[in-house]
Image (cartoon, rainbow, N blue to C red):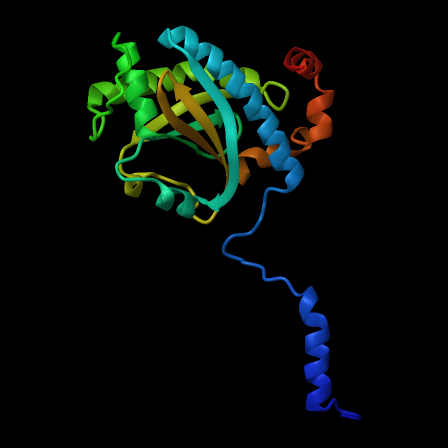
Length: 233
């Protein structure tokens, strides 16, 4: 080899290019780009308004719901972050592929159960798992929220959500691919005096078939979104 680089020249080359090197974690790739996340937030801002109206009427109390945050995790990471006990429901967005997850914080779940049973919504929440009857109430309410979910997703895809299962121990949550990346969208929820959250986790494989409809330009050009923006203003 002619004219080999000296060690000093190699060190200088590494130092000059080091600032442009970025670490890439192959175990946790960023599958959801900013535009995709932005559109999912728009979908869930719409969903939050619809859920707020539905739950306020159904529970006969004041309810406030807003998008709090978005994150990307692998399915394995997401389930490991859940508390134990938890309230995690698996559901599908037929005909889209894959299983999605919904985690509901305990204080919100207990507030829903108490209101369904006609209670005032006590400030003191029991520190225990939900009973089978209480879990049944939560499943029924979640199934009822699939109507607002269909409406919120209408400009993206005609979906038919179906509930698969509910788990109280995150270890037993069934996932199809633990390494798949999900977009986790957390809604801040207030029911009366109770503060909590609901977090939806959507695998990339679920939204991949409708990526062309999940751009901000496509969303804003869809029929009906203009009317929603006008009402919001």
